[in-house]
Image (cartoon, rainbow, N blue to C red):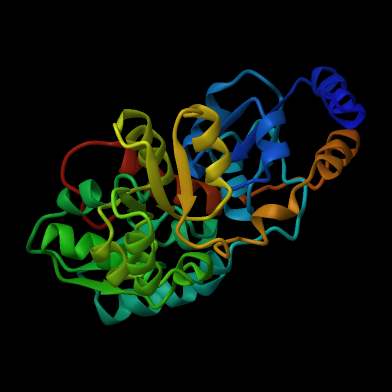
Length: 306
């Protein structure tokens, strides 16, 4: 263990803290984390744990969600500038304008969004459960999906629903093109290709599976394939290789790198524990409304407008 890692472990105990790392974080950050996973999985984990301090190694909306679900805890984001370009594409005003144009629609909000956007939506979803969430909405209701047009388009295709899509997207996943899938097929003809549903529609169609990061990890573990091509942010390769050392994982695109995800470093984790900052909080009125959308996702039965 390096000197800085030793300092982090010591301070973590002193602060009664837990370190959570998203699947796209730097390998060294994932290695020092107590838990790794996707954004909602980690936010829910934060709410279940007894520690007073949560060091959330991800991007801002993820730490916001953890703060919403655990208002009594101190939630730290080691680099306060680690934002999400897709989340920043949609504002609460954008959602309200869509609501005004489609007053009877149900607003489905991808968890990759700000607390303000969640607060004016009806239900949240993740990339893993978006299809199930849409299937819970009565078929006579219009659906607005924000902010990711590619995930929303994937859900529309799978469910057969007409969905009004906001024009947002993940720049990292949008770099992946069908040409990259075709090239991977030619180079690794026996390897299955799995991609994230934030990818362009033609990329999802050309791949063998469109899966969330958590689903990718489970799929890879259960697959008999010895070589798998993976189309998502390259940080996931570390976890996949760590959990499946006997298998070979090939990134669909080496340049699928989210620079914001890489801003959290061991040094910044140490500083955040020393200073208990930068702290992420959500105004109580916003958090209360946003939590309703999250709770609607976690419930059962049909989903309608509030």
